Length: 64
Image (cartoon, rainbow, N blue to C red; front, side):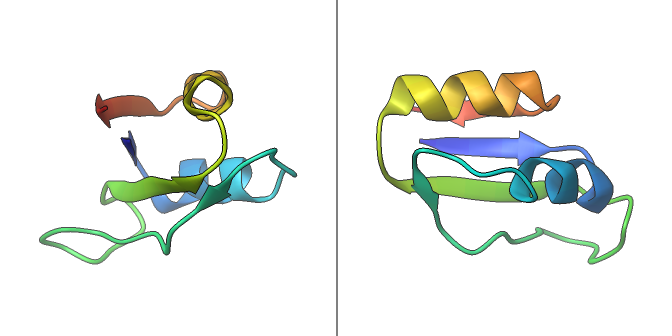
């Protein structure tokens, strides 16, 4: 499962909180800037927990 955050700041807020799942390294496609989208993938843990936390912090789920 993959998620997209619209900026580095938005991802940083998400990443600063403890979670019950593990994610891979965040990455950007195209422009590497603070206003560029940040992608992150679920590595382990419940998909429902990941989805809820991503949506709580303004991200969007892209793939299952």
